[in-house]
Length: 357
Image 1: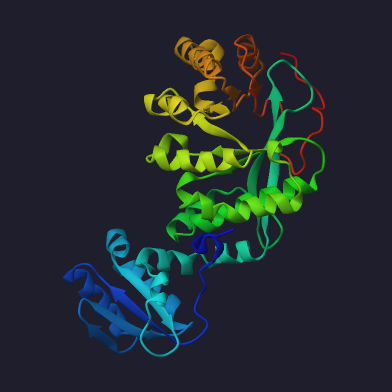
Image 2 (image 1 turned 180 degrees about the vertical axis):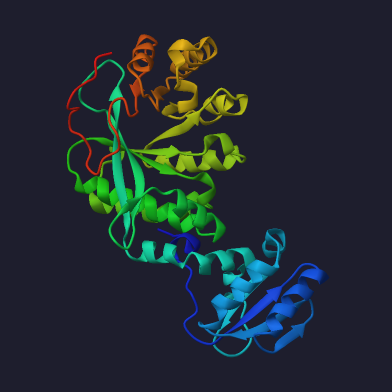
């Protein structure tokens, strides 16, 4: 089975002497860079580019000065190749071509590499409950946490922000999926698990998902217990690409879900375009739904429309008894939120106390 070289490979910080090649887009950007570089050593000009010898000790300081001296736009438009060893870079070396912004972010966020290499991703589980009041959770959503050097657990916001800046979203998304799969398998039981993924982090589903499928087989999770959940549904630009991803999952026997379905036309049309097995209603749409005529009408219609398409509906972000009771009256399939249970290190086999609705 082929695998994706980009998803499978973590970037490396230089370990020895190297040459930094840069191709700035404009003359004034080139002038800024040359002024900075001259203070670090001899600069070689060639065509539209320039190069400078660097070491593991000098490169972080150089990049810090670059970040202070250039705008974000200039760093995005400048391309960089770091070539270790002597001689000219070969065509294969250009697989490591990156934006200057990504290289600066990588060296500023080297802690992210330490987390991924050090097996410090953790899974918290939040139950998804039946809408009819059944005490046994239907499934659990796998939520990412990471352990700092002292063992304290932190939310993933900083991780994903650093990964986007360093162009490592492909790797983080894959590492998170695989950590969830392994951690879910260790829990035993028969619960289903919702695993989040970002569509933009999957370049080619046949290759990018190969390792994910292999690990699911290795740990012995049955395909009907794994639901892949699209996050950032409201930001989907390439519907055809997302269709290919969902088709790849479904052909392997997995179910799929759309997250954060809201009132916007763009997200509602995805129901017909993608035909998922589940949709999750955005928590902003659910908040105070029982007391807001607009929200109530919108949610009621979405539930009816989804059921016409044989799509099951999960209302998330439920925090009050009143919200849960109203949703039950509308025959929502499943519910999720702090009202029922907060995320925890272990999935619940049974709710300790079903809250009265």
